[in-house]
Amino acid sequence: MSRTLAGAAARTIEAELEWLASCLQARLSSYFGQPPSSPALPQAGSAPALNGPDRDPNGDPDCPYSATLRHLELDETERLLVALALAHHLRPQLLDVLSSRNEVTQRPYTEFGLGQGAVSGQANAPTGETACFLLAGDDMPARLQAIARLAPEGRLAQLGGSGVLRLAAPAPGERPLSGALTLSPGFLAQALPGLSLLTRPDQDLPAQRVQTTLAWSDLVLPAPTLEQLDDIGLWLNHGQALLHEWGMARRIAPGYVCLFHGPPGTGKTLSAGLLGQRCGREVWRVDLSQVVSKYIGETEKNLGRVFEAAEQHQWILFFDEADALFGKRTSVADAHDRYANQEISYLLQRIEDYAGVVILASNLRHNIDDAFLRRFQSVLHFALPRAPERLRLWREAFPPVAKLAPDLDLPRLAQQHEISGGTIMNVVRYACLRALARGDQTVRAQEVEEGLRRELLKEGRSS
Image 1: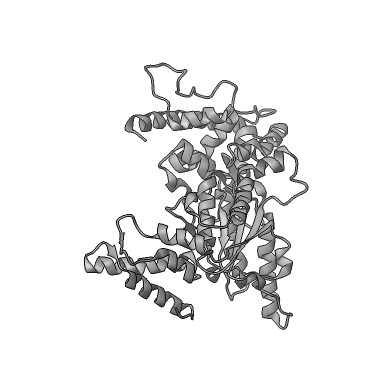
Image 2: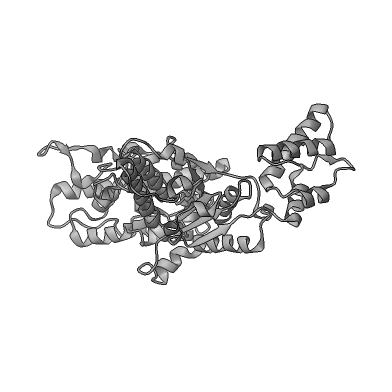
């Protein structure tokens, strides 16, 4: 964002937050004055004008924040809720007045809802209860309207595909409205580019983001597998419309669960990463070794944190080596087996309730219990590439700067050695490093052959 646009954005947001402060002051004055009924806020026409093409040509230029609000056609109430959520990050002291204690009960005002019942890291965040208090005070019809605006099927949660604002999951046992108001990463990326820090997840999550510098065109997969990946993309792009605009929410699950199975190095993780890249969603790989704990209740707690973050940020969840939890079940012999089954049941329930895409990956399909397979929307097989696909992988694996020796016969290698794309990349890495060590840009055939021999030995095979 240029300095000029950054200044325009700052002035626009400043005006929005000043408007929020005046609405908040009006609500508190009305509340403590105890009128017969509290007026609904915001007052019509009270929102500041947004800069843009219809404003004074000598004024501020159009900025991403103003442009996004106009593009989404947010009404004044929706803009006020966005400002409330944004204040927590950009002017937290504006909300300090809501931390005051009730002199009668000697505890914070329950109706102010600031961070009450929120999960760790949201202690001072405005919640759904805060939003209801701001919009409605103690006016019950207005409160019901405010709750409807915050519903998962409401406009704010659905706009633009990824939504604008939603309620985070509350702490266990707390009321739904005690969840923190959370702006979607997609909205923030569009309205406030460069401020990704505001959406950074818990650094201690047992999950890592899957990122790739490759493009969809770099995927080397059979046509049927690519078509199945396209099906998942259709759900990511149109699933919410199917659920809510076409009324299918009562008939089908809110999310999409699929299994990727096949040998290592065949593109399961890369496909997940590129699917997210293509559909504008972050992909996070869950490390089941960090999730599963020998201590009772800890596995559920770890999984709960992952799903809460995923719901907040609308991630695609990628469970690698899913056999660890979804393998063939044995008969219950002791308390440990019973607890393991409880963990599986908990994870299955969270997956089925998750309104997003969950990908489970396994090297072998028959390692997954058939009872679990029936719950999946699709099962994708990532087979070892065939000879034509292997030749393309060999040709595209070498960097442009590398020169291939005349005796390096890639068609012969592709025809003779049934190996995965991951194995091919390991061979190319080995041979290119050898060339660099010689101070040469030419990749020699014997070094590729040696790298291939090493990879085959790793797999217990001979060349």
